[in-house]
Length: 147
Image (tube, rainbow, N blue to C red; front, top):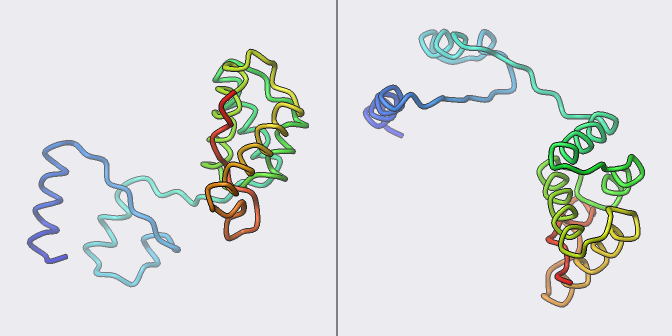
């Protein structure tokens, strides 16, 4: 991107009050960039983001389910961690899909319901020619089957 393009983008972001986010493997003070850029990056809040361990993922999934209005038992959350992709986006999508499927079928969220949704969505992926697992060999989060 040219310098003029960057300036134009920065000006448009300022006019529209758009939040800018940058990421790096080190804090701004340790980056080997121009001093002006280093001070601009260090001006705002700097956070070190750590991946969640399994206990925190379980808690996050249960809080997400509670915000949607249902209780996700710890056994079910553990099942998701074992049989679904482990990234939080996929796990949240699975909880949303499970909630929708539970409401559509008017059945409580239970392990058999979750297992059925996983098995049917995996079978649907196979019928469509999709691989049931992603690069990390964990089943992908998919939409639950239609009743």
